[in-house]
Length: 73
Image 1 (cartoon, rainbow, N blue to C red):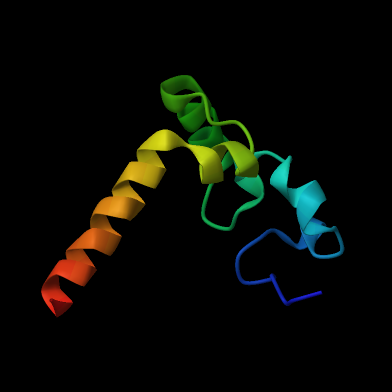
Image 2 (tube, rainbow, N blue to C red; image 1 turned 120 degrees about the vertical axis):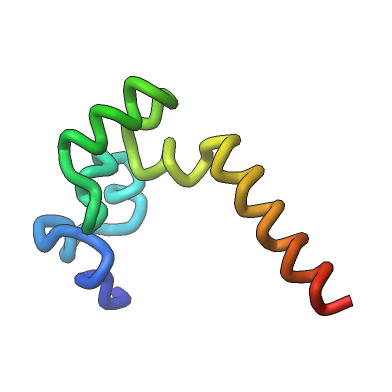
C-alpha cells in the first residue's frame, strides 16, 4: 500500500482505501472534527467519499483545470 501518512491520521494507515473512503472527513490531516461537522452541516459532506464526489468541488476542479488549459492555448 502507498504511504498515506502525510495525508491521513495514523489510525487509517493500515486500512484499505475502500475503508478510508467511508470514514469521516476528519481522518484527513488538517480537517478537525469541528471542520467535519461544519462540512456536514453546510454541504452534507460526512465522509471522505462525500467530499470527493461533492458537486461543488467537482465544479471548482473543472474550472481550475480549464483555466490551466486556457493559459497553455
